[in-house]
Amino acid sequence: MIKTYCFILIMLMSRAIAQDFFEEGGEDSDRHIGLAYELNGFVRGALFGGKVIEKNEGELKSGYGELGLKMRARKGIWGDGYAEIRFRRGAEFDEPLSELRLREAYVNVYLGDFDIRMGQQIVVWGRADAFNPTNNVTPQNILTRSTDEDDRRMGNFVLRTSYYWHPLNLEILWVPQYVPSVLPIPIQSFNLPLGVRFDEAINPDARLKNGSLGAKAEMVLSAFEGSFSYFRGYMPMPGVTMKDPEVTADNKIFIPIALKTYRMEVFGSDFSTTLGSFGLRGEAAYRRPIDDYKVDKGMHIPNPDLLYVFGIDKSIKDFSLILQYIGRYVFDFKELQAEDQLLKDLELKNRMISSQLYELSHAGFMRPSLTLLHEVMAIEFLCYYNITTEEALLRPIIAYDITDALTAKIGGEWYKGPKNTLFGTIERALSSAFIELMASF
Image (cartoon, rainbow, N blue to C red; front, side, top):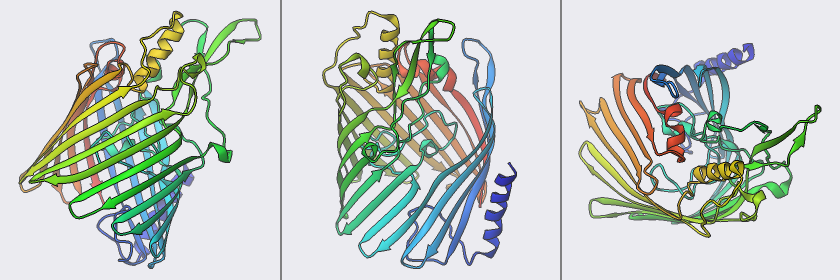
């Protein structure tokens, strides 16, 4: 803890001696403009409340204070370094929470038309809103309690090279070490029978052959943007598998189950353009598992599938609207066939995690937003409904700028779904109302 506070103090002291600061941080800042240092960030407090699972009582789902710091060090036109650190303290899932996390830390080198980026970073592919079939490079934590959807993204070590040949941009990346996404189903939802228990996750080691590769060719024109992408390697979201039975020292037999990742090839494409006053966006990906998904040992591996998203957006003064259709087709789909109850339950959980409960599924997504009071207040309402599985998500948020760099938010996130669906499983654990106060600097 002392080391943590010392690090934060050093960061704050560096602000006082920096040559200048910028209004905005992150990788979108102009790389050739500005002086040597930049430090900014935020402090916030947040409360999330909901219902006790299987009881008609309210409870605190999460409450925390958080400090976020962002720093960029520039070296003229040759490169820069960027880092973001988060320190969160409070309670979550009825447990104490104390977390120091280096979200990103990477160095950019600019060599004419070539850029090289190395370090801990978050890579986001795709142009659709919220649902991105091509975004498979770095992991996510869907269980993160935050009013900002971007906080669910996690960093990983990536070596990334880009070449700019206007209007064509080429990108090649390598992920040498696997980092898993956090399973979207709380561990409490696994009702394990007697003699079955969770074991240590099965993750690939650091051998070079276990690295993941990605490539993307992107065209950027004034009226059209689009890309083709390819990814081959371990998928961030793991599945659940069953290990061989083991015997304890007192001759009792138990069956271990564990999270296990899998390798896939993903061929993707996306685009965005305009049609009159409407914006058009689309994204699609064909995912093909490299390992055998048809055998019992491959129950954690999803079937090949095709996921596609098409949407329109429209802005009228202070009002904007995004509408999207989301579809998925699962190849080689079969109904659950396992006779053993444990195998059947694990197979069902895997299909829930990979959204492959049905051969063909259809869903709709809507995000209207409105700014009021000369952009002092913003109202947003996210709505998702899966027509096939009858799962729904509602996420309204009202944000109010009390003064410059001081914001209050109030809203909620509610999941709903039938039994044996993902949203139906997590609705009581994750549905909540929230309030947040944030001060930025």
